[in-house]
Length: 333
Image (cartoon, rainbow, N blue to C red):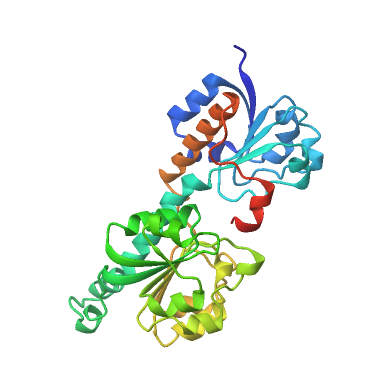
């Protein structure tokens, strides 16, 4: 049986990060892979797509617009080896009936694990103890009094996409009550996931000791946590954002944090990186990580494995497991 033609519109450096050697070997054995030879896929993309029935995109790939698709007469599938597909798809792609699959589900476990790690680090005051011990302070009783344990507390989860659901799964290992806000999920579906639905975000926020954001960045979710909602956060609580920086009004967040009222753990900011004069950088009750949740180390190999499986399903005439449709875009990250 003739091999099918697949264009790999990903730089060689990214390919080695995303695909484990065994998965890459299997891909090359099963398909005719037309791959980028340099670090800029844009210039080579038209030629690579000329015979392609499927293509693989990722961070740094060109947008599949009318001009580029005119060079891809046989293209029927795009498998995006990253999270959001929004910067890479176009109206022309949907009009041609080209199917799209996203690896967001493969990234989600790593992001959820990062959120849990930040939660436990903040609850158990790990960063602060480390800093004090390095300064020669072995036991700070005031700091010890701020330790919180994941027993009997309430955790609020905003957004139940791939990552939010993974986070819920991890939380089920602890004796905590999970309150969830997501307009697209019914109370019954949330109950099956192990949480309790709260219809009003303003009702959820003041109830929880930990609040974790997993919502997409959309016009209607920009500054979802605005000044009024940030005021609802409990004293001593922990706010975690591993989703998108635009979900939080950062100047308003600074006003709530500057007196140490609660703790924020931020893997994302708006913009990224934060400007050097961002006042949040001056606060000891803010833990930063540089947008690495889910997109570092071995977790990236989950993406390559998902891509390989989706290609196999497509060419075996099986339904895609992670298809993204045009109508999904208004609720996805």
